Length: 431
Image 1 (tube, one colour):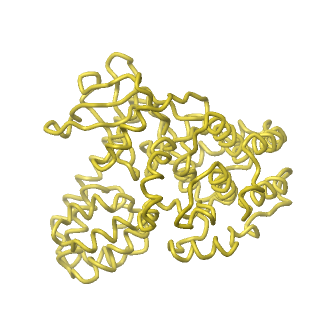
Image 2 (image 1 turned 135 degrees about the horizontal axis):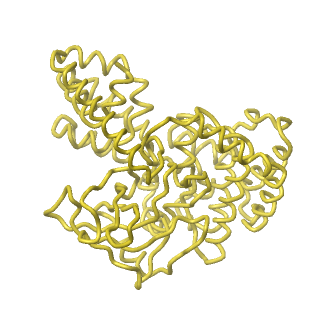
């Protein structure tokens, strides 16, 4: 997310239409799509959790960053969301992009994008990061979910402002370092030291891991937990390069070489982003003629409808007809589920949860929201463990092990009811 200045425009509830649509969530809050009445176009509103008010204060004193490859920030939101009229909330008003992130693209394609697009994404991320570093700004959380995509699949760096501001807070507490939402897999070995102060080489290392993820379509280190990954990275282990056929296309060998240079154990040996962008520009030039075919290929493989999000299926943000169809389909799915589950016993609901454990761990992202709805069924200690677990998969695994397994049929049935209400399409697909 781009940073804000003291002169940044303030946007209030009165400036926005009442129809807000939730499109994603992250470590700092939830993201909504809303139409600005005066501007006449959609914006993204990221409402911040209550515990990051100090981050907003510090972010407001930073200069505005504007770049083609960095998500644009329009202002600060202060007001009452339509779903919460009694509480004033703060947030950031951002550019709305309609194709999700590299992470959601990988998920929807069930693998990496075509190589011409992969090379372009690698180049555009390098350009965006070079732009930030030239302005003495760091990202500190570069990963697939923080590289958003516009309708033409061009890269937009996001979530860099608050991650930089927040790093000084969690750097003083080793346990809270685990709260970076899965980011530990993209952290350099020196960052696992207690006294580490982040420098630009941090971002370069993360970029090397990101390149591997873009080309392979995979998450580095699989489902390995924080402690194992920290040990492996510190001992020099890196993502498996055997998964990349370097002879498959021109430029892959050079890109793999760039990865290895970026994730070098010695921070001083890692290249600057200006050098990285020079390499990626040369590599992309070899595949630029194939980019239109690659984009068309991706479009034909994506779901026909969905909602932009870092956690859900992407869509075209301004297609009103598609949105109406989507809402009708969702409503229909909810109606069907309501009818079908009226006759389901708690035992049947519990069986559904047990039978689909693996799929639910992989697919459910907003675990904390579910834990909150389960209320007293989730023990306070368990809630803290889930909250401190960095990935949604890990959070779901903890919820299963600590609450659903021991809670029996009653808790599993309650969990099922929440899924049915919040994720009807997922429940339908698994039924």
